[in-house]
Image (cartoon, rainbow, N blue to C red):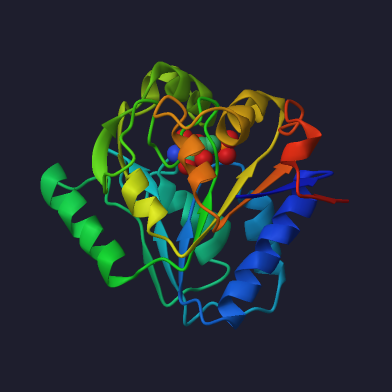
Length: 243
Ligand code: GLP
């Protein structure tokens, strides 16, 4: 795991975009993408650039169960409005929140991932250390499944909904096992509210209680955090600083 601390999230977004470009220069065809506020600066860089993604495929991490693609709170809608409508990809995959049969949907999505092995996976980080929607306690070896969200995630994500009761209680999420199959992984986290999770991910023991801590066991992972998210790290954990 390589740890980069940046002066702010815009610098982090630029760095993450550079990593995407170098992966593409090295033949990457499939990007694993994430939602949430964290990847937005990187998506802005992608949109502002003249890089052509029209031959690329994207596979998203997760989707709320029950939300239709055209629902403004859905992750499909987020991806369309924050990236795909402005930077077309050849093919884009997001789990279908409206699927009738959850078991069939998770099977379908696992096949999507198997047919489109991810070259570079982008991750955010939950305040409780979750990646995708793999909440504390999640096993490290599972594929896509339907998961129940924790109260802390429901509360954190309620900022995007009118009312906490509107936040779906379940989601489809790539499992940690699927995420770990990616050739390379870039995780970003910004802000003081992520500082505990960042410390747990990088400096504490590898445990299912902090799902992101499994990334310590891989050398194909780059973590890019701003100074606030890095505020609980010791200097020896940091490999590079960027202004
Ligand atoms: C959600 C998503 C995660 C994301 C996390 C952090 O729970 N499922 O993939 O990383 O939120 O969100 P934010 O980037 O807005 O802090």
